[in-house]
Length: 346
Ligand code: SF4
Ligand code: SF4
Image: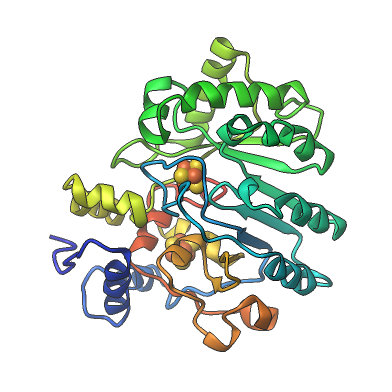
């Protein structure tokens, strides 16, 4: 069995410990051995083009697949002080894209201030909006207008165009609220050709399976959402569920962990490995620590050089050519067409 050497205790840190052991070469079928077989001795970043910033783990939802383990009870939130440091470090760099995520990033009380300040730096800004946040409280009703005023690109999860699958993964009533929020966005021009207001949707499988073809699914989504709800959007990103956090717990609890990992490993795609998102992205945690990606962040695996591991020590000379810390979870990025926060990579 491919992953029989992994003995899980019921915690993410135990999982991270196992990853580190694997990194040290104590197991077969490691991600690094697959990289080597593909002629990649070690995974290194290129020039950092995207800063992905997690401004807090609080969320109005508790989705079953969430790799952040986000929810209403999470208290970790980025402070304005950390945001000020990010703004200072970004100024004068070539980084032009900021990807703001959470939790529900809008629940951070300094969210709107931070977005406006980033906009003053003339940056392309993406916000990962879960849609239901817009309808969760009157103070968020005007979020669509706020996004429009700041020309924010909105990326939102909708794991299925049918109610049952969406509600199964994201909670009862989420589908109906998501449809209402999408209509609000469409009404002010989001997702409508010629407006320049980008509305992209994210599909991730419900259950322990890999996503199917991005282009096929996008066409299906466009057809069904328009026919049934008159909803328009720009692109669909298919994302593989990563064996991390809440989805990892689900895999272990449901007895699917080993078969899922075998599936990911069997579908390893060397072309995807060359384009994984850590090669052009750095992830900033709510407390300012730096990670090779959002998934490493959730596993608490910081960038390799601990002296350059916090936004206070932000050093693009290092980050632009750093060695990436990989582990078995990385197979989630390289299976099939590959997977990143921006969808398939090949
Ligand atoms: S997947 Fe997104 S919307 Fe769902 S709990 Fe996690 S952060 Fe919140
Ligand atoms: S999980 Fe993170 S570090 Fe691993 S390949 Fe994917 S993006 Fe890179």
